[in-house]
Amino acid sequence: MRIAVATALVMLAAVPAHAELTLCNRTSYRMDAAIGLEKRANVTTRGWFALDPGACKQVVDGALDAEMVYVHTRTPPVYGSAPLPQDGNASFCVRDGTFEIANARGCPMSQQARFSAARPSDSPKGPAVNLAEEADYDDAQARLAGIQRLLVIAGYDANPIDGVPGAKTQGALNKFLADRKLPADAATGPEFFATLLDAARNPEGRGFSWCNDTKYAVMAAIGTIEQGATVTRGWYRVDAGQCVKPDVRGAPQRLYSYGEAVDANGRVIKNGETPLAWGGNVALCTRDGKFDLSDHKDCAARGLNSAGFADIAVGGQPSITVRFKEP
Image (cartoon, rainbow, N blue to C red; front, side, top):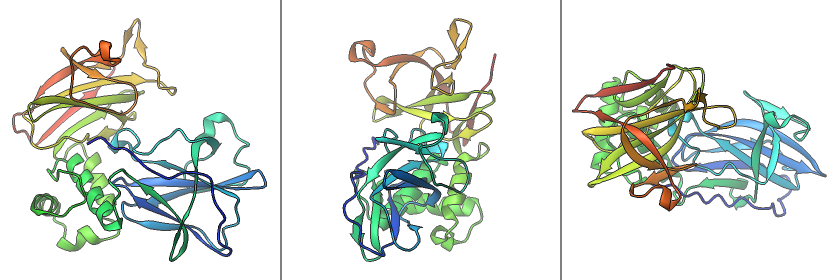
């Protein structure tokens, strides 16, 4: 499914006095968020706020005293490319772990992230910034779609990812709970998304995984056969020493895999004159940035790239891992 995001991130209007600020995650992705608060040209940033799908979190205690509000989000690498735009109109300082930076313009560019200006909407608890997908989920739908998405990545067929309850989703959820000997009410508990993420990252679990044994980050793409057409999706970032399960739908008999090592600026690493890449002889289309492609004829003529994917016979195996290793 191609994800288009509508985040309504624009200039801040007047904020009610003595109002707290809330962030609401109405996407199907677990994410961390940081905010920027500008007053008289000074910007303070705060983060990170963990947001489960369908959850809201208060991010400002007491009165919101700011002329502008900005938001930056990030998602775990297990999802692949970030679902929300990362090309906001302002760059401010961030750091790992919990932080509050009073002068958020006073750090090197390497320590900055792109923030988008946000207009909070009114809610019963005061101003709120809603992070939303094109699907326009409400809170309950976003939570269920988030569960569906991570079940699929973990190797359980909960498609389609639509936030709509049904027998297929319930069956996949029941199988997941049974496989891990979890009680039925675990799916409604506060730690369930952490459990799902652990399962999605687990290379020994069900489904297909990439594991990166190199010292570089690897950007990977997956190909599957869907309704008779070959579909490629990417890019998934697999950090050094990490494993990632891409979104593989249904129970395919074969998969196609491609990966290329990149440096800190996203440039392809070369081994001599040859890109450091892992693939095979099946030529399929890719492109820069997030993609979901089903037409693989004349890639270059359509402004796309072509890469040689490895052909992997699944053959009903419950678990397959492709490891990226340096030559």
